[in-house]
Length: 508
Ligand code: TNX
Image 1 (cartoon, helix red, strand yellow):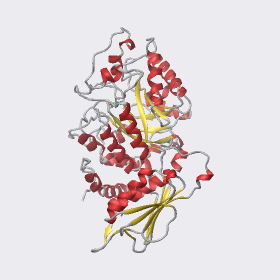
Image 2 (cartoon, rainbow, N blue to C red; image 1 turned 30 degrees about the vertical axis):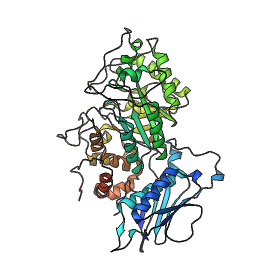
Image 3 (spheres, protein in one colour; image 1 turned 60 degrees about the vertical axis):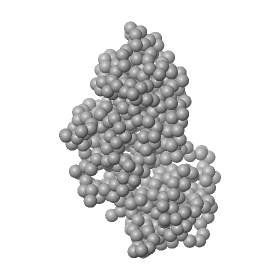
Image 4 (cartoon, rainbow, N blue to C red; image 1 turned 90 degrees about the vertical axis):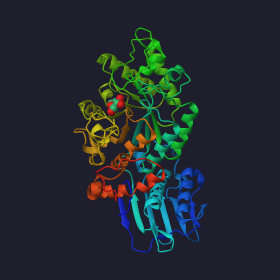
């Protein structure tokens, strides 16, 4: 069994000797303008490394010996739209990620109709180069002869990082993007604001980061993303076909804003810095005249800073607000975000409110009644599945695990993998399930090592839930997944990514 994760839809090992990587291997790619240049260069590097010599990148047609070919089957001339990178995470876009990969003795061929598919196919090839090479005795490394046909199950395949409770800088976030892309995820949701801090510099409201940028759980110093950091991150994400989904959490989880702008509170006085970890106590409402201009400014600027089609407005855990104030607020938020041209994403509490057409609801708490989500789905809203008892990567692996919380129980690798998003919530039909996202809240997660220990290996399990066919997963079973997962360890070690050697997995 090849250590491919997520499992491809169809994989057939072929008779025959496989493809010998003898330097210089030629990588033939179509016209640079239609491709992800960084991805092609990355693939060329991996091929060079695997073959132990330089690889040669050629644009145009393939002739001559050892060749890896990337081929677009859909003529660019047939399309009037230019495919954006990152893609909107819709069902149609998911089809654009389909590809085939064929390895035989004289050629490796990745084919896709669209650049997005070629990118995912190249990712599979990189994974094979990293984990599946067989070395002939004293000779060249060999890729096994095979044929793969593959496409994603869900359009939205995400990971969320809470950069507020503890701050993680651009360099760490870029590594998270690399990890996500390696396992074919396509969304990085950043939880940018909360009670403890505000992590995105906004020109319209500079005090947010000036006064609330450096506090976090336990004190500080934390930090925030400058405009330059943000641009840097966007570029890194786009090159890996990851859509950034920024979240400004309102009307609760807003103490950092109340600390920076006292006019948002009923008394007009700024609140003190909050460095604890409890939730639910802070709010903004439209009763304060400063609220509407504030919300308009921050979401307008956030939309301007976001090339992707989505903006997350939060909406979770506001324990101190009346339902009427909450409903009014969400309705106005929906109007503002829609006015910017973006699609609103909200946590499940907001499902009961009057949401704009097309808004996406994110289910999270396995301890909450999902009836609001069911009704929103019934009204045509798509749902992102983030059930805390399967994909909350801030839950402890085991009761005695030093990091993490346990309000939703323990979540070990098998729990992250063994569930079906299509049938997870009774009454939410499969057609409304836009995808899957694994949130990592960081109340207890303070360092890069903590972060990767919580992500790995569970994020890889969630990536497989999001990409692979349920029938393929059931046929392979958790044991099959577990063996393919164990094959990833050298890759993680190579990047110095910490992981938890869970008891659920046979690592040898
Ligand atoms: C609930 S999930 C929260 C977060 C906490 C998390 C801890 C959600 C929408 N809100 O504020 O960090 O639990 O697990």
